[in-house]
Length: 284
Image (cartoon, rainbow, N blue to C red; front, top):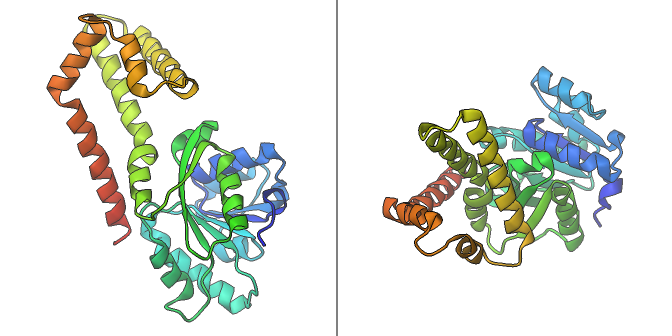
């Protein structure tokens, strides 16, 4: 049976922005700093995390040795090496119960991780939950998709949900593993699409004569307010759009220009490209 989150010993393998965000979400919920350890090779990152009061180390083995949950927060390109290292150290230690692994590695499949952790079947492989949070987790407003291997228990799923829920307002379990690539393309990469749109709005208003500082403040608040309406309203996005759009008015003129420029197709192409790249990362 998986421990409750408040009692779990949690190891982060990788101490980048997402690890820092999750730690920042856990600590206000009463998780003991003594129960969190982070393995991070880059000294400045370790120093920043140590300022939060958690333990840090440069050793993956040391960080994960007594962990109930291991959060794999490394780049996909190094996931194989890290999984093989952890699997080998756990086997050498003769652990009778392996930790639950929560993987944030984009594109890296459950089958690949089972192979790497178990080193081709020579050792037992841990239960793994794949998750895809996004950077708004840094401000406690994340969105996360999750998928678990068949051997993950309901208690372990609840533990993973609670863990990611500490920084996410939406935690969605998907029905097929390949759908995590779609989650990556939608909400994982989605903040960058949003920021790019805001950049273009500011540039357009500036070219039309509005001072950049004013354009920036107005664009930020407009997007914040629209996002708040989207989250808090029971209306569909299409209805909210219609509510703003008077026939033959200014908004209608802008939306017609979007249609003529192929916005719908551009968004579709972008999401497909991101999903394809997520799939490719899992095969490299």
